[in-house]
Length: 113
Ligand code: AMP
Image (cartoon, rainbow, N blue to C red):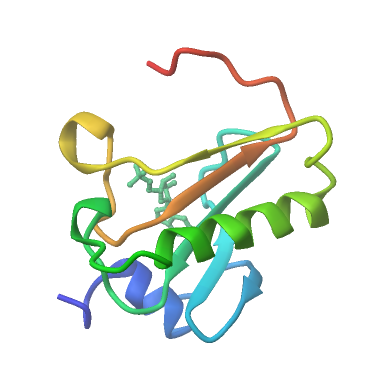
């Protein structure tokens, strides 16, 4: 799975992406079909299928902390932004490698569809 997984391949730089941040455990890159002026995905480099499969306490915290730093960097922190993790079919997950969406740069509707 991890060998052919799209986001694992992006994490290994085998598939090009627009990287905005990277550390030893995480990578952040621009969504190829942006739904807002800023739309960035934050992923763990090590494969995890979905939020249901996160077995440790600090991974999602690290991902969120990176999202906040990127929001600051993108200039959207003050006006606001949204962080979203879609999980499985009803949650709208289409890529089964855990990712946190960071969306901002426009006013976002609520509730989501
Ligand atoms: P989700 O529906 O939550 O699983 O989100 C998957 C996201 O991955 C979508 O917003 C896609 O536009 C995005 N995506 C798919 N392929 C790529 C890619 N090669 N590079 C960047 N983003 C991608």
